[in-house]
Length: 136
Image (cartoon, rainbow, N blue to C red):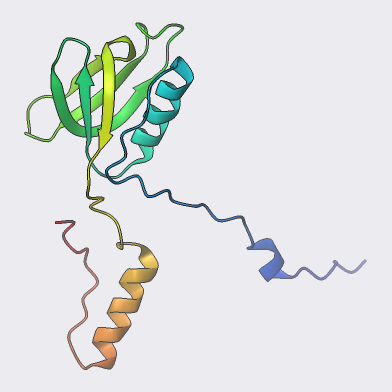
């Protein structure tokens, strides 16, 4: 029995993802659902996020984990502060406002952009190295 012919290009097609431009975004947090949505986006964001707490504290850093509990008090955000201090946990119930940084440090740093720059350097006779560029 012969195997059916498989078109590998058809197997490789997958829907792409759309990256929202979140730089500078200040989401409205009028409901629990809006808070959850904004924190989900903050978790995927590659830049820093400023969290203003209900007690007036302003915390700036990279959100690397969100843990949902049964209530807002049981749910928390884990952040790496931008000043290099120890990691902090912020309960959802303490969050009054969020602001996404004006700069996404990974913008334009896709694999495709790196390959294009690599080949442009090679074509120009420059040294092209296989090592990551600085995000700054």
